[in-house]
Image (tube, rainbow, N blue to C red; front, side):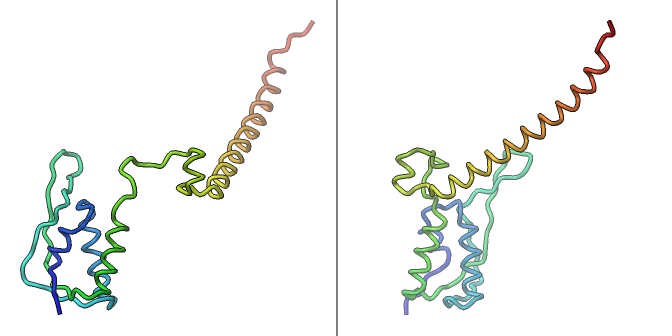
Length: 148
């Protein structure tokens, strides 16, 4: 049976900035019995750069290495986790366009529901604001009215 070290798997990640999340998921999967692995006494440094709050300094963390039984189940698990940890696009949020909706990149039903919710909240806010102003104007008109 082939064995592979956790540090070697981390190097294969498409997005090294998610290496800490990958290590957490590996440990959780081993704990739940999805595949077999064992701790090694040595440590390795994660490729992720962490930043300290309040300053521009960065640092890296080291974690305990593991030996993993490289079965086909582990390989398929790794492929799915690697895909999950890799962002779909580097451009950020997908813009709402007709082409993106037709291509299936944006769910039209959820877009419509979100639009409906926003419009309802805006309408309710406007009604409440209008009622508040109407009651205030009624009071001020009486105070400012002149007698002839």
